[in-house]
Length: 96
Image 1: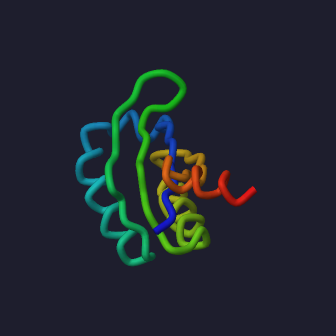
Image 2: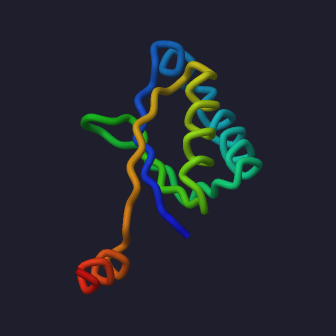
């Protein structure tokens, strides 16, 4: 199953209502599930991003839909990258 990393920053609205973050995270998990996205783990981070989620989905389209729906709620802005595990990228390299 393809892995994606979603990096998020809170908006002014999101940080202002940070105490609601646990409820928002649970709602996001349900939203993701309906779109065929499994949130494996979410981390609070410091540095360039406030939050980072590791997710899996069979389709990048599902990830795009999820990020648009989450972004439309106004609490976070997202950036997403596709990630390959060490085994996956070693296989890709072996096929060169």
